[in-house]
Length: 150
Image (cartoon, rainbow, N blue to C red; front, side):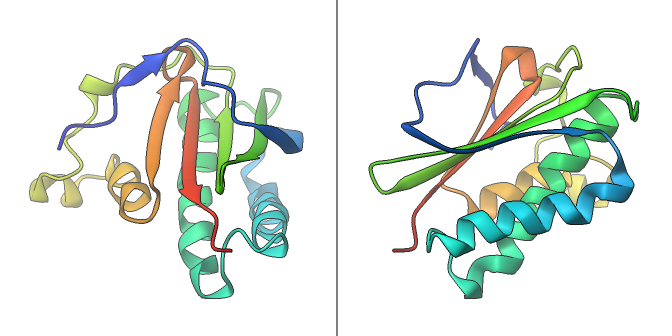
């Protein structure tokens, strides 16, 4: 399976906005971001306690990609995160200030040799648990979608 393509300029309407936050790209603050996002999704019953570790792993991957790759590690650039809910699904979007990327330039996450690469494993990890992983704004935004646990 190839890396997810960049499907549109903007994600489709995700329903009700339940969370929106702008954070500086400061990796040392990442754990607080992860905890806050997980608390929202688990607290609303949309992610089970049993799946919290999967959620944290996916959030870690997408936030690190935005801060390190998208914003090139510049702590003065922000990362925007929003959570929408509709139709028994939640969608979390993460947007950085970078120029994006071309999906076809990423290693194939399902090629076993890509597991040994320093970068590119995050897509495989996220796809394992999420229902959908899409990119927008030339790759500067990632949308993670999953059905609600309840």
